[in-house]
Length: 94
Image (cartoon, rainbow, N blue to C red; front, top):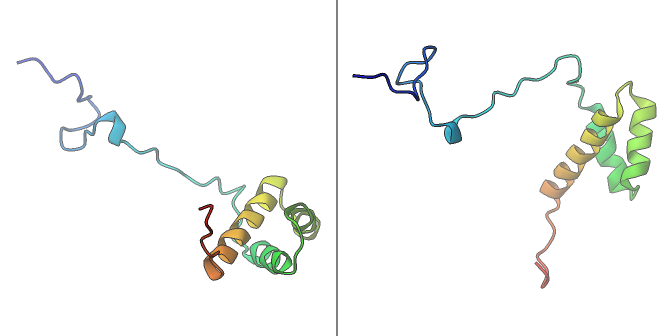
């Protein structure tokens, strides 16, 4: 009996999954990921006061020693928190 070509030597049959069911394992780059929630909280407060995303991102970048990617992520996270707290009402266009 010939071996199943889908089963590799590194996996047993019980561990094998079709390629469309396999998930990529995401690992955080510990040098890039910060756990400080302060930029997100500050961004949320500034957004509540009506500042636009660019102004909030600029302020977060000047206040904390984080890169542009992390500043934009903090603003996006603040938007998520605001949307959860104040979900918008459905309109006729939705």
